[in-house]
Length: 202
Image (tube, rainbow, N blue to C red; front, top):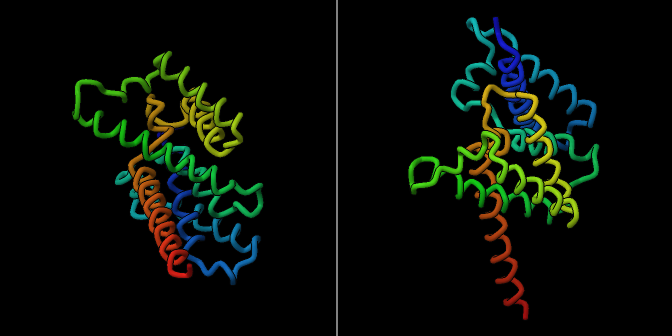
């Protein structure tokens, strides 16, 4: 019988597949209600059995469970118009934080160095205190999106939302690191182009 964490893991993948489908649909031709119906339809369809397993299970087998940060950004991308939009500076701060944390975590966790930061995710007091201070600082400086992502990940970890017992898996995943790197690269290219165009008009 599927466990509780199987349902939550599959649910996260279903959300991701639905968000992808909505993002690929012609945005101008869909109203808010139609986008919500498409999202719900794709999410439910991905949970229906297909050859013995739902589509979400096949995707989960390849990707693993997605972090809560990834799911938050996907939902914000689909339904962001219905909620107070995150500012550009909040998104930039989150992208920088994701990239820096990924660069610190993944190479060292794979054996590049003597220290493995992944072990901190099992509830190390110093790590938890650092995340608390980071969330409080983000809230104080009005970086509400990073603060929300941190709080949501810690809360989900505390209730055992996923099969993993490591907090890092709730905060980050490899796809999220690729997204952050790509987004920052696009920002850098756009800034260079804008600077070049400004110099040409002077």
